[in-house]
Structures are given as structure tokens and as C-alpha cells.
Image (cartoon, rainbow, N blue to C red):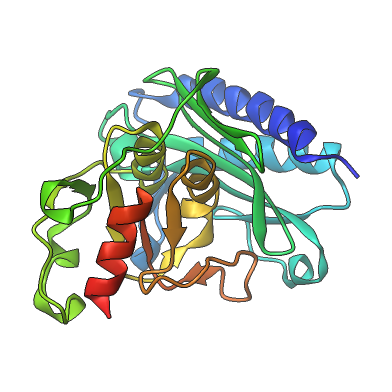
Amino acid sequence: MPGPDDDLELLIQAAERAGDIAGQYFQRDPQIWDKGAEGPVTEADLAVDTMLRETLLGARPHYGWLSEETEDDPARLSTETVFICDPIDGTRAFIEGGRSFAHSLSVVHRGQVIAGVVFLPMREKLYAAAKGRGTTLNGQAVRVTGATDPAQSTFLTTKANLTPEHWPGGIPAVERAYRPSLAYRMSLVGEGRFDGMMTFRPTWEWDIAAGTLIIEEAGGRATSSRGAPLVFNGQSAQVDGVLAGAPDVHQALVTQRA
């Protein structure tokens, strides 16, 4: 069986190809379809998804497959190892011509992420992590911040996550910032640009799987919104929100959520 390093190299190569494909449609009025509550999808999303599925499963035919743009096949639930991918995370930003969309690719073994890549082709930022190998940005090692006090921390989140119903212990006095892609938000935490991120609504696995490993291998914590371990390749393909960041500030906010 290939190891995390081999899988990571495969993901990096696939992510770079995804960036080339997305670039052919970027700011060129791609065809758009509305998926209702799931938001828009473009011909770029579908083209990237097709390439990723053919490339990754071609190299690892015994792995399962879970992707935002592929109809879910329950057969993945019986596989020990599965690719979990979001062909374009931040599709709305992509449609609007924003540069902060990302390709988010991961390998999950027995519910845990062992390799993950988040690539922002228009920003030339490639985040990569393999289990036990640390996190890199464009080949250079990165770490989470040393933040300990929520009142002196900046979190990537939306206003909806800082309302009283989420915080029985009182709304934390964190400074708030925002980026359109969940995968990018998590990667920025792993890079040490921000102290943490949070989202309390049900969250698709493909948005966060790669980012979870990027944060953890950079020395941070990434859990459910209540502090429980994240387990991937679940039947619903969703988790109960995410709270992630530097270890001490993460723990402080988990306690405040109790």
C-alpha cells in the first residue's frame, strides 16, 4: 500500500493540473448551473472533478471516492482508504473573478486524513501536509501561531458564528476576519496568518478534510464545533461544524462553548 508521502506527491501533481484547468475558465464567463441549496456549479468545477477522478483513481483504483461534484457512491463506506476532494472550493468567488478559490484534495484512511493539499492557483499558494511529516507552504515549513488568549486573537469566521446561542459561556472577544473558501481559511490558520477559524453549521467533509491535516501537522487543533475529534468518510459526508486554531486558544474556546 502506498504511504502518506506517496499519496501526498500524487495529490500535489493532481492539484497543479487542477489549477491549469481552472485557469482556462477563470474570468472567461464559464457556464453556470444552480444546484439549489448547494449553490452554483460551473463547467470548470465539473472539468476539474473529471480530471481528479480519472487521475487519482487511475493511480489508486482500490481507494474510494467522495467529491462535491460526483454523485455519492455508498461503496466508499466499505473502503479503508478514500479520496475526499473539492474540485473548486469557493465557487462563488471563482464566478465573481476572485482569486481566493482553492482546490482541496485529501486521502483519508480509516476515518483520519493522512495526506492533504490545498492549492490556490491564482495566488500561487500550495499548502501540503502528510501524517507525521509537518505542513509546508510552497515547500517551506509553516506553524500555527502561539495564541493563548481569545481576546487577543483573530479568527476567520462569519458574524453568524458569534451570536449568543452558540456561546453559553459568553461570546468571545475575538477579532473577526473572513475569506471565501473554507479550505483557504483552514490553510491560513496552518500558515500562522490567523489564530483560528470556526464554523458552526453542518460542514461538508470535502471542504475541510485537507485543511484539518494542514492545521494539525502545523501544530494546531481541528475538531468539531464542540471539541470532538473529526472523523471522515461518514455516511452523511458532513461533520458538526469545525473549531480550529492554535492549541491554547482552541481549548479556551471549546471551554467557552460548553
